[in-house]
Length: 490
Ligand code: FRU
Image (tube, rainbow, N blue to C red):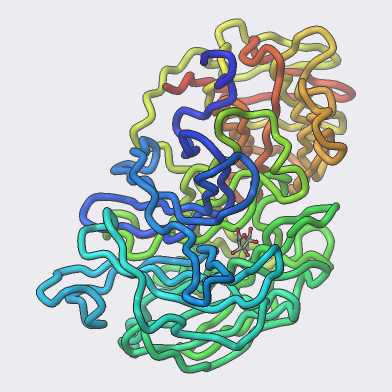
């Protein structure tokens, strides 16, 4: 088991076995964070989509629970309904009347029922299921669907409570039109269309999995803005998984601000994560007061090669939960992401106040193992500087900081041959001058937070021998590293 599971993360969520894609129904209730997830109970590739379920008190230790919503056969005896992506809300006081009377908090899932027969995609419509026992057992609502356009492409409802008008609002994707539709409801059962957003930003791929929430602007006191996340990299070479829009939501529709920043290519809008392994992130509903910033969590893979990654007996995992805020910069409002590592034990094994490297490499002998939190600031000084991970003969993974960009080069990182799109060097743009880098590593998954989370790059590597000592390098100019800290994580 040790070797077969060498890529199993320890403080990220992954199913015990079989396939997962998107996180679904992220919600907090009575001391527990719930993750539901697109799950194939019968195999390690996509199929039989159902909602798996796990809970956590701290967002890093996850307890597996029984399957929440299995796919089901339809009364026509010919077709079936798969449980596609969606959200979950806490209906405080059971105002919808969905749960038995007297239920204090009714947990309601709003998901896409994907109706198919003999491999043919017939219909996508929005359904409800509810739980009176904190998600342990579920029932389908007899009045399903609650929203249909009689089309096979209409999915991923993202529902939240809109306090100013005391109503539920839904953002839901019209994938082929590059649009997000908005609806409102007094009771989760009747939905009324209120607006549309898009096409805008990156429209080279279909749109899926919207997430709409309010986030604080941390350097403007008391200011908040609305954020709309859209996933748009489905099965498309060239990736760019997720984009975000910053703007206003008036309870009816979302409008993006004119000064949305466009890091990198304007054609791609605002990129949420520059790595290849980040998709379908949504936010946690109903989060506790102790967490003032929205929390998002995404699927740490992409559709191009997800079905081929060499992990077993599970395939697919999630990113850490990330706290999200906005920061006013000369280029506009930038989304900032910070990883949540609550509950993870940390031990500092290397600490260097300052290191200068000119055409040399410096090993950090105690920075071993494949569960690490590595941070430093570096000025590449006209050359290149960075990190080498898992150096083992010809195998290595290189993080290169150059002027204006940070690149993860996994072309020789180990097992890269399972799909032609996997071996790649992918870059995130950063400003000129010193860059702060933080790499959180959990087995095969690297989450790289740059300049305090203003740019993020998330990718997997599958080295044959993970956990060799990390080294620093400088090439070209005289690279100056400051505040190098390496922690081992447990
Ligand atoms: C996104 C997605 C969703 C859909 C789900 C199906 O990754 O394509 O649009 O609901 O996966 O598993």
